[in-house]
Image (cartoon, rainbow, N blue to C red):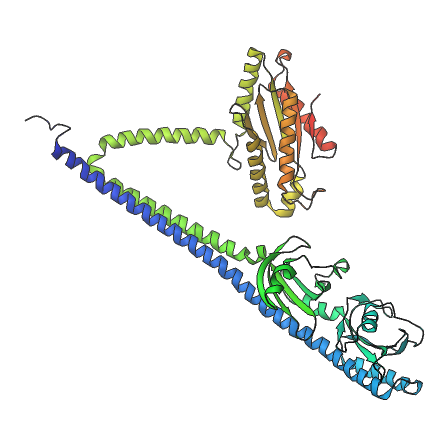
Length: 517
């Protein structure tokens, strides 16, 4: 009997069954791997949202606690003012009572550690009594914001003014004041309590807010009363255009959100709350990147474990598929082996000529390419240009942000360079360290300089932060050299000329392109 024909339905069915089983096994393996990957991604995302929500709740609770503390501290001082105003309006202000009033103010001030001083001013702004023992009748505070406010506003409630420096002690203080009236309702003066800003800062500094967290006590007019970390320049700064006043407070007197600061540009997880009874807002915020730091570590660990499991599962599945194909794999295995060898050779060739970090050509491919292109330029008498690109202040960048951030910086710059290398005959390579090279066949030094400037501006416009750089962001310097095929210069001379031009750019202040002589 002869061999069965390739068109024999029985033979086709016999060959098709193992193939169907193999395809089913492959489909199942892929489905399992994808399911595991989806689960890990979903769990990672859920964990991220949980971390953010957890810190939002924490900031909300902290804002509530700090609002209560601020309300209590101000309420104690305001209660003294209320009693003092009532006494002055009922008993009057005369010379016989001033000595006793001074002693009373001093005793009341000593009872409250947060109070810097208690003061009484007449209708002209002249001191008539104070708790600090200072000479009365000499100083005049009619130019202060709180005095002008009460002189021009008849309301009898407490007024909280902007933070100021005390004229008696030079310390930063918050002012709480009330209006004093004559019996007929005319303005008679002001009773003032001053509270140390350091009272709030001591409390705020004792709270762990990470390296870049903030706590603000803000007035209703959007000016900063006190801020941690404390900088004198921040006091009185208006936050009227911040998300807190444009978006959050119109929705409610308390809440949480994730917003970007208009002061330093940092994105933070915030909690805010109005202080009950007073025109103040407490704002507490943690740096979002710091909040998510532990989540990133956990996610990377989970991803590593899942990758290992997927690798093991893939290995087991591969072995299972091999067993299923054992009876019909002799010829297929030979073809598969040949294909794998070709693929392996292609991968090895690619690895040998590609930089692992940036994906650009490596030094070996650069050397081969520029040698070949210089020979072609000499033969055809065509132009050739070379760019040498170096990242400015890269060592301080690594020292400040770490080598992982340095690697990411090099990858981003490699992408920017690649985006500007549009001709298929051009080559971008990582020359070594933080230095890149671009070979431009058929280009003179003018065209090369224009491209160098485009790359330099693109890196500068990317705005990669670099606090150790005078520009505050990552920049590059570029050396440009054009090759004259009639000169018969060698590869090393072309590279050396471009490198010297790069050195000139560095020596001349960096962040510039220089054409070689």
